[in-house]
Image 1: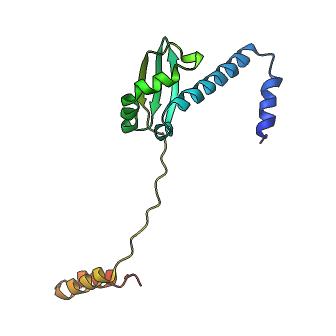
Image 2 (image 1 turned 60 degrees about the vertical axis):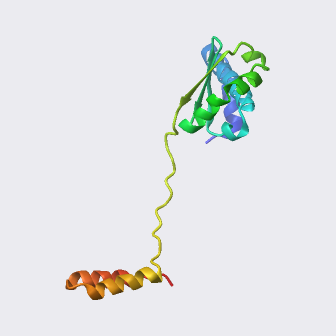
Length: 148
């Protein structure tokens, strides 16, 4: 795999393609615009918020959760005031926030909670009162898994 610096150079080598140059230039402009917009968003709300577009005075952002989107909407006048300081967003008059949940969330590994001594004692006690032999054996086996 190529290093990042070598990858950047490969874009320059493909300079004969005007479509690619235009696409890279638009991507860079979008990155800079996102940087400016997220600089205007309060730091507590900036994580998980993305700049989507700005077209005809309508600034569109996306947030990971509905709660964060509501907080952004609540503070929209403050955010638009800061954003208008930049030349690119001078005519922003409307802020729209979309909820876009992340595609993949890391699930925490399931961890069995160890059995406490009190619960083991209760299982043994219940096993003593049970008439069914197989159920009693299962309860006693569960009780033997006590945490030390």
